[in-house]
Amino acid sequence: MKLKKFKKITIYIISLLYINVGVQHFINPDFFITIVPPIIKWKVKAVIVSGFIEILLGILLLFKQSRKLASWGIILLLIAVFPANIYLYISENARETLNISKNQALFRMPFQITLIIISYWHSKKQTSKQFSVICSILFLITMIYFLTI
Image (cartoon, rainbow, N blue to C red; front, top):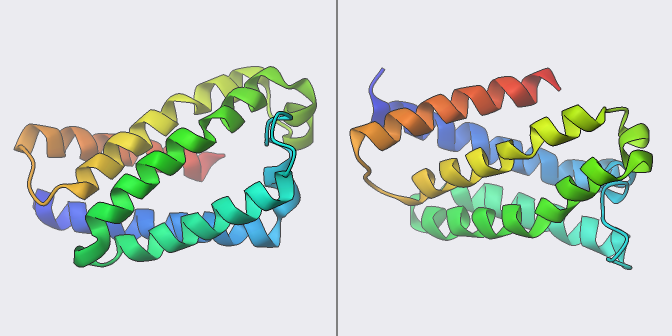
């Protein structure tokens, strides 16, 4: 399969995943509220807003005209929600609620970086073959990880 075609497939898959995770913010907000750091006092609003943004960016990613904007929005969103991953790692209560170990919480953190790299790849109309291969591999590893949790 050609890299361009595979990249297009990854865009559709990632788009659907962001839309799905965004919908989950509304269906199961308690899951996300659990990992909102205590410094944020408006936890429910933060979960609702981030869920809405994920849905919106997932939809915008589907269209060539808005893909670059959506990709950069996803990068900013991933950076903005990274403190939730740190909180999950340091909070025994959050880990117990989500039934994951400290090592599992630590292991999931680098996947934010792979998602950022993949989003950057999606923001570009053209990249080098080497970068596309690296991003394709990162995509496959990331999807395997998220499908197994």
